[in-house]
Every structure is written in structure tokens, then in C-alpha cells.
Amino acid sequence: MEIKDVEKLAELARIELSDVEKKDLLSDMKGILEYVKQIESVEVEDTNPEYDLYNVWREDKIEPQDFSREKIVSQFPDSKDGFVKVKKIM
Image (cartoon, rainbow, N blue to C red; front, side, top):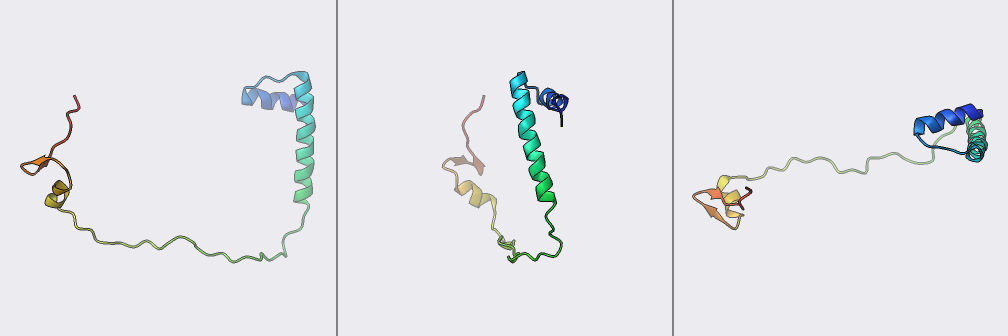
């Protein structure tokens, strides 16, 4: 990674960086990339996880619900002739 790569990233992110910030960011990025290389070198093929996977969500249940015009209209405070009265919008 070089300064031109940091400049390209800054351009893509639409941020302005001073020369000092570019050098600091380059140093940080090199450290991050070295750490990623270290993590990639770990062998994990023959490892077994020590945890059990299970679903913690509830099962979906279909519960029949009773909907009728009379039941819905009766829940509103104001109705007339089987219609629900609401506030005027316009």
C-alpha cells in the first residue's frame, strides 16, 4: 500500500486529507493489513466449535381471528349508520 492508494480512498470517500494525515493513515492501514495477514495464517480446518446451534425464535402459529364489520365499528368512539366517523382532513 502506498500514498497513492490512500489518496484514492480519500477521493472515493470524498474527504480531504493533509500530507500528515495521509502518512498517518498509510501507517494505520499497513498495521491493519499485517494483522489481517496474521489472522489468515491461522489453521482452522480441523477445529470443532464448542457451541450448539439452535433456533431461539418461536414457531409461527396461525390463530384464527374474528373480524366483522360490527365488531370493528363498535371499537370506535363515534360511528353513524355502520360507518366510522373520523376527523375532517381537508
